[in-house]
Amino acid sequence: MHMKTGVEQSVYAIILLNMLPEKAVLPGEAISQQLGVSATYFQKLLRKLVSADLIASVPGIKGGFKLKKRIEEIRVYDVYLAIEGQQTLYSSSGILCDMLELREEDRCCFLSDLMEEAENAWKSVLKQKTVADLAGEMQAERFAGKLKSLQAWVQKTMVV
Amino acid sequence: MHMKTGVEQSVYAIILLNMLPEKAVLPGEAISQQLGVSATYFQKLLRKLVSADLIASVPGIKGGFKLKKRIEEIRVYDVYLAIEGQQTLYSSSGILCDMLELREEDRCCFLSDLMEEAENAWKSVLKQKTVADLAGEMQAERFAGKLKSLQAWVQKTMVV
DNA sequence: GTACTTTTACTCGGATACCGTCTGTCCGAGTAATTATGG
DNA sequence: CCATAATTACTCGGACAGACGGTATCCGAGTAAAAGTAC
Image (cartoon, rainbow over all chains, first blue to last red; front, side, top):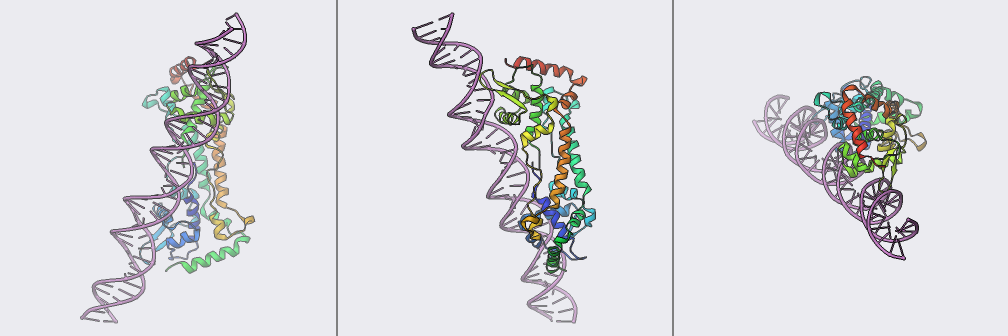
């Protein structure tokens, strides 16, 4: 039971894309290189973010990716959902029902109810925080220099 | 990202063991048979519950398992911890630190903090509910007959 | 110079392989009650 | 009848095989800008 690595990668990719000026895009390979992750695999994740309508893609030469929403409108939960899908953390295998030999209409699972409640508590934390909140925490004084380097890299690497 | 099936199995095994009279035990194979799960694999899970001090084992002929704690004192979280271990749901791969080229002492991850907060919210729900609470929900009128059958099976199957 | 073709560098989606973890099986060792054996 | 040995049915822990999902790679197809070509 472990979260996929793609969620972390996606969050920071979105923060990178947020440094782009209007109409500019970043190629997928450049992003993955900056993040230090597998290029071909990360492009699959980028496509998931496109499907989830968080980022937009531009095909062709001078193509790449850019934000579709403002990061203030992208909750961490949205990124999680885009990468992990909407399956629940827990799914009952129906042991209780089998033991009690319940009919179809009587099927129930007290454990499922509890797990659902727990999962909702978990999700609600992820829904309260936006990627903008995280980006804001990076504005601390001690990161200023490195942030500037990153922005310079974006300016240098972006196209159009 | 999915919870192991062993958690559900363990919870209902504990509820079964709770039907035992003092000093009686249930063999591992009988339990797994009642739950309808793989016998050899489930015995591994039972040993995890023993290690976690939730149940006690009696070796030798006429051996088996019985509760070590009262189910009022066993939180669903304890069962989860016994089966899944204490690893966190999320662990940072340090992408942010790598991008900002932070020194060892400056390492941080805002995402980790958020994920930890979310995980704590999730855990707290599982800590609030005991196995006794779940067993109590099974006392509903419509289950009375089947519960009695289960108890009869326990009486028939237990040893000592 | 303009219209057309070719090249280039991207995204897109599927097929496929790798690898770690969860699930499941098997075996030898330890344990304790029962049964068998010998005096 | 009593003490000892063998049998039996469990737990214990490790080794190992299989299934599955996350990770990673590769390829052909589509797309659009740029470069090249013909008139």
